[in-house]
Image 1 (cartoon, rainbow, N blue to C red):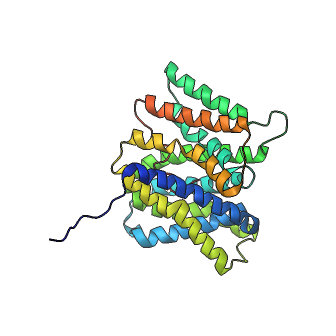
Image 2: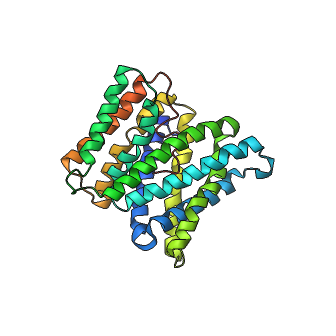
Image 3: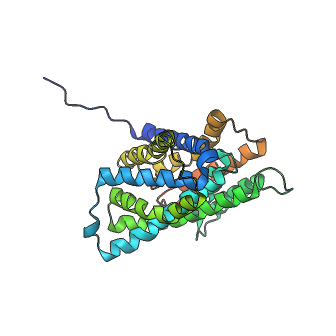
Length: 295
């Protein structure tokens, strides 16, 4: 009798592999910056990711209701702006610091409106992390890069809220596939205006495809698989490891070395993220859940 069992990747390794995949994609993106710049690289990633997911998911655009359009359009715009701002930060500061600062957005959302003293600890820990990174003496981290990363984090918080609203009226895969179409709206004009897309070569297109797969398609599939098995809280805790993973990836793949204070900042914000998740009454849809086309 033939066995009909198939190998299925366990949920926790799936999340960890998704994190590694996203950071590997970020390393590819940094390699494209000298040729395409942040805007051109974002355009390539969002465009190819949208095409792949539209071909795979095949959403029926003509059947969307007015309420679904009202939800998915701002969701997609927030997604595109978030990606563009993150890549602008990544062009100026190390990967680990960019992801760490971006995490302030969802962490702030998780703590917003809380009146419990325990959450003050996580907020203070995150603030200490930012203080360790901030260029108080005009040296160290690029100030504009820091601003781009924090702005990307703000967009991430907005994106989570809009993603929750969109998920309530539209299935997850369709929401992301359609959202990516509108994510291109704030990104492509900037990419075209930069002039970097004019000289696309087959080699650059191949790297763009790899970027889309590692940063979007593969982690999206792995996270969707894990979310069907893991509790939201467990998933959020695992995603809170991403700043540490980004710092290690920047060190191993890009040769980016952080100062001791910057490593402490990464650790403080990651711990604050885990702590906020563990003590939350109701987990926010998380520090990762929908983050398939981000950082």
